[in-house]
Length: 431
Image 1 (tube, rainbow, N blue to C red):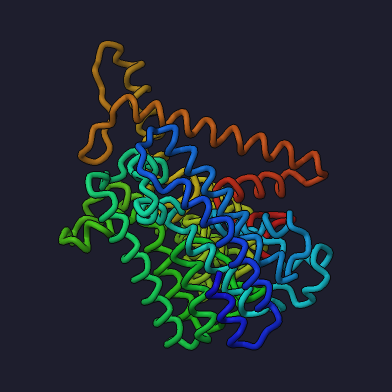
Image 2: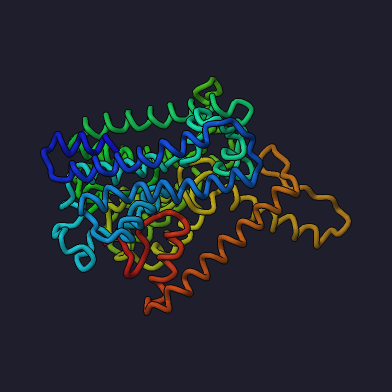
């Protein structure tokens, strides 16, 4: 929290005191917690999942303080919402709602630089999963990290790098920081202001989607900026263990990975279908139509949630396609939300296998993804997760209709929130 304080000081903005108060509160609470938990102890799976859950809640509470204490968001519940949306990289925001925050006449662009930085920074921290960060830090507290890493890196075909979990976590963070630095540099050289470059790099590699502009990426007219962000959204949607393995010498690991090839195929198919649909509807087969088709396909699939166009003006086919891939998410082990492509593949394989078993009752037909055979335990876990995911989606959409939301807005908001996307449809669209 000292980083946004330094930025507030550098820009001579009045939010400096609020950031310093937030830092002091965290130190006063954090030091006793560290002192009483510093002794080494082992963790079982229940402990790991409990710490994962508590970590998200507590970090979001801590992250709400700068919004609240600087006076940016006067209501603490609203501040906690903004923080939770940031830490979980959901990207939904109450800033910009003139009825909720009349003090911010110009929406996001009314925010001081320190708060803008903090808003992006908490997404960057939450991006790869707060728990991977914790794996590198918890040894300082004498706590192991294997169960935590298992809890936060989903996907039935995700590579296991647990034997050297502490070293792997550090390398993954080096990769994460490296991608962030390169994107900052490229965006700055492409003409984006350097402060905006830092904030957007934070929220791209984390697939968070918070922007420093009310119009999101549409505020930047240079197509090169859009393509740079497209590339890093794509990178952020890839399983980070593949990046890890590529850096450690296995340079062809991405192309050999079955889930990666499916991920690439979904992007190409979604982009092509949307491009054809919106171009034929508008009689506009220009480069700009292709750019917004590719950009929005990746922004929704990876859960980044940026907008460079108002997709609610598109034909219904394209809108429904975006809603479908909103459920997919990107690859398991990436910074994206959603169900993850690995699970979608497994569900399709399971359905196909069960159909074949009905036709050949005595046949032994294992489920195979790429070169790997999937165990029954992984299948059960995936089916259980998918049922819970879809049940929460349906229940949330149903509850939202009780608040007089139309069906499209309720479905879109529910899918967007559970998939960590941000913008949705209807009342919660990109504009």
